[in-house]
Length: 241
Image (cartoon, rainbow, N blue to C red; front, top):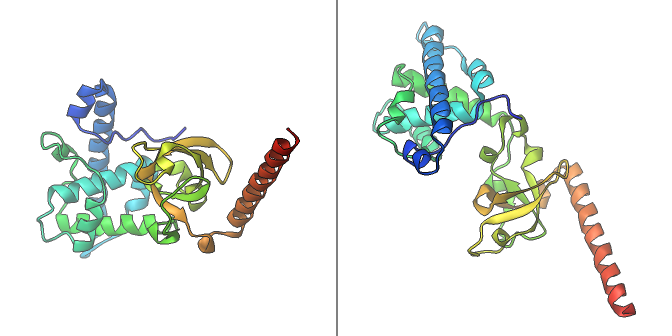
């Protein structure tokens, strides 16, 4: 169980429709606290025309998900402000912070936009140091069944946000089929074998085996050998019958 409060990713209107107002309210309060703490951290660490690195204590307190969400929301709310870099604007747009004009401004960081931009740089640097896999580590294969996939790191909790836990072996589900009406992909984490399911859109795609660490290649080979043995056993059973 994560030590961080769950991040509610939808609007108040969505929460009212699905009877999730309590979840929205708790997450919103935490967003506002996070924004205030970021503002205080920026103001306390800016001196001599520079911003000392102050992102790590905020990440440790709130987790990457919420800090990313709050900073992305702040930049998106001021997307026309030239004091935010093009790179940080593009980064902010990659988050599905849904438009909710009545409430999103509540958790905007109120420090100087130029300093928020520097904080965003620190945040992105901290994220990059996690060494997570991305879409560049995939091959052009649309069918997912019995394939090793790469999960997008944003669907993992902070406690499991590691490249090892991005490797997911798909076994079945309508989401495995390209252009299927279904979305669910069932399978298990290659790291520990835990079974679960995700939506097809939660994946970058099929992993490039050339980029896999040795332990992952060995496990993948074991899985394929097991499948091959089971297939031979099934064939022999059919012949006997």
